[in-house]
Image (cartoon, rainbow, N blue to C red; front, side, top):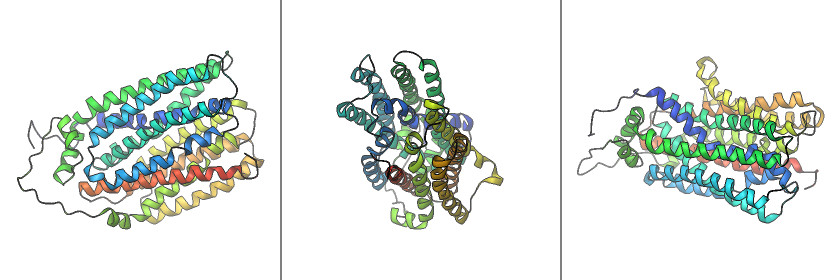
Length: 416
């Protein structure tokens, strides 16, 4: 390695933790913005189940994209991909902010047609392609580094939901009684989201690659044979000295890694199948009417997001962290008891019980996600860790796809 002294393994650790938290937050801020204003879209498209449609329509494209990225994971320039992803975040949220109010008009109409819904879906697909371009890389990058930075990134993903829920509650309180309040609240909401995505783009482009701890682990991965971090190292001012006749790195194939870690892949798949079969579609449309009125769905989504965030910090307490492979699998299977619990609570229970159940759904989602990702086998070489991280994120997305599809089953017997 050339250019200056070698970066330290722990130098800049706490700054890196904060930056990873912010970048994780930025990965899902746009996604959660779209989900959190579900009441606005339900008002615009009351016949089209927008909470379900918006989470389903982009999934086949995202799953196909991630499958290609997973297959070619060893050859992709991750810096270009992340810069493109964060740029796409900023552009898509900006387009929603600029185009959408013009489609709706100054006076909010109670129902809109297919044309406006298609435009919204196109903007959303741009946004969510960026989501998985960035999450896919930052997850496997975090596998190269300390557990604390990875956990901070995962917590940042959940924090985006908590922050957007808080902002949505604030904008609703401000504009709830004003004329055209839905539209004004949505415009303010997406204005904040656009600014935040621009901040994350600048943060990743100018700050993240120069952190000493990031340079250390990227350098370590490069020396172990990873070819995906060269551009990031160059951006951080680090160059790798390679021999004239490099020796090919002997590494496990994707199939071999999957077979060795199939239980972890199924774990992450099953976590998100259950979660997305309930959140946000069921919570937005099928929980009945209670004294909270139009605030009810927003409160449920906010409670899920807050407890999801809390759950991602619980494993910091070593005595409650699950690390046993069998223990994690048993906990995930027992979590499926939440399906009948939600069914009977929606049918017979009051809003207090539903809020408790939703909070538990979020808590277990965050807790088990961190347990799986931080307990998955270590000791692999850099390229193998990269590939294993990609495999787990692919199964996570597969679980989301299956979950949002199964979410439609709650509508059986209720009409369309």
